[in-house]
Length: 118
Image 1 (cartoon, rainbow, N blue to C red):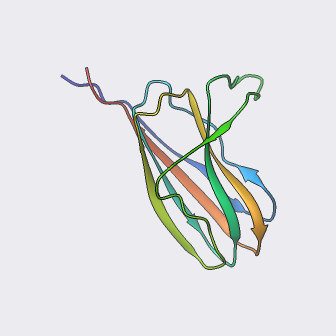
Image 2: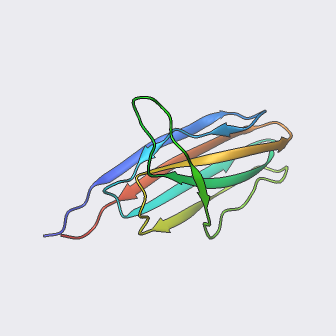
């Protein structure tokens, strides 16, 4: 019988007028991760998925590095959204980084992750 651990949480849901990072999600024992990203208004920003293996959840510190994610599209002044899938991530922690450029609006990000296998 295969095991399936599931994580699902809203990690970002706020007005954006400066750079912001989502909440950090532990994915240490999870294989497949998706982000559902949506924004409103005239927001323009650059997005990056960042990962860390040394983040300390007690001290809220660690180093995050961006990874290449297929399908990650930046908000460009009109409302929108999409889902990105990331499979077989060999990292302990993940977050979404929003590098604000201009405009106003809100951004939300929901993470879903699963572990599959024996």
